[in-house]
Image 1 (tube, rainbow, N blue to C red):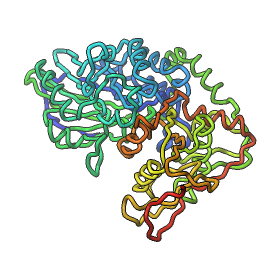
Image 2: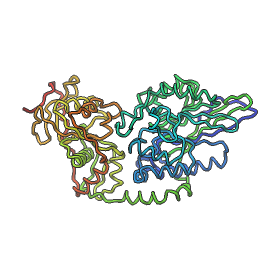
Image 3: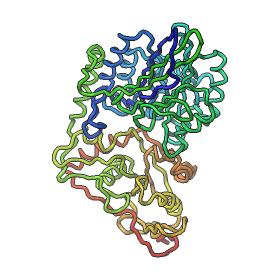
Image 4: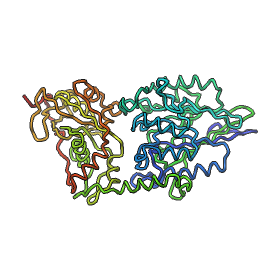
Length: 511
């Protein structure tokens, strides 16, 4: 806990700001392998803490800092409606927009927010008047016992590099500092006593990146009293960033964030800020009323996760003996190829999890495919494929390096950029002719450039002559269908990049 500005006050008014972040649809405790430091988590148990604090304190504001809907079976099956039930039941004061809020498209997000009837803080989102999100506003104003609390809610500017245009409609995402300047200009007009920024970005100890600009924000706008972060799944109880208190409530409801602000009503001055993270452990009983509200949805989700996908003869691991290629990666890519009819697939491991030997259930599939990525397919020439593989080569030796399916190639990581890839051919050894086009599939995240990592891939796939087809088939369902069809499963990693450290120039086999 970090306390600042502490001093005696004759008339101190206490205001408590409670915050959750990156719940990802988790109402119940996270799986043991996903838990952090043995904690339990889940919004049902957070709810018990929230209600306990409200019973003891009169001045309580509750906000969520984004990535509320996507990530659990119960939310997936209801397309987020179970989380709407939860936030309405808990009477959240405001919601922020995270990047995963758009996974089911902006039309679905609008429908969810419309049902929630809760203010949505959208500093950092620009839209034509007829395309705005329901209940949207750049900041929240609360008059509490004579104290004016203003909370600006900012999203993440990198969303267009994680999501496809068809998921975002006409929404635009200005640069962080530009968006904040505009929001602050309006917020200052209401003359806040306490000024808070809630943002779907996280603090990075080693410095900012394009998606997480807390250090730059704190430097550019020192008049914030408090910054509440999200997105990076870090648990940060309290620290000072350019003399501003920063806090972040982790993820999956493993912690409930609580910030206690003291305000001297006589001197009209903030006297203290105390930020804490309250662990949400197994010793906390779920809130009975909320549990009853979502009981049917949870029963349906548990039945869904028990569905049998098939049988695996051996454990299917995510371990890579060759770069980018693992049994799990091959399974996902083979499933995408079968679902899309693609000749080749570009994909990597999504998690470190694998599938057990014996019976494989939907819950196992969720562990290796936790995201609602859909499939895109385009028809590319060998030269275009090589450009994509060259771009991928810069991540050799890192988790971002993608494997392939349906093609093989030689990779010389020590060569100059543009000369690392050679001998591209089909996985059966057949050459790809110079002007031949083969169908090439990627998931929607990579198709959006994977947060800016693959801009050339996006450009190539979007060329008119590539005839890009974007589908609504998600990769998790594709894997489940593949397991059903090919059970008993015995899948091994297929060849992809063949590492060759000898010098060579990039050439294509073919006629």
